[in-house]
Length: 99
Image (cartoon, rainbow, N blue to C red; front, side):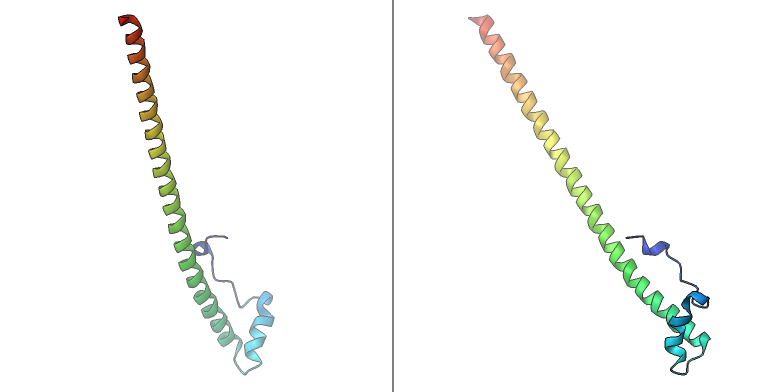
């Protein structure tokens, strides 16, 4: 999904939107009024899409942070395990030379 914050209001006065305007002009609205209605509907939908996008981005960032913290914790655990194993190996080596 594209970032809705970066989208621009379509040009509802263009020929491309003649049929869309016709839905309103059939009810007696002018082309200008139909354009305003279409623009307002687009802005409403875009605002909603922006809210959803923002929530999704926040959730993704939270997931990234959680994963990053989990990986850092795992790295720390691996380091502690490695240091513990190295210490045990040193002790075993010392025992060999004492006997």
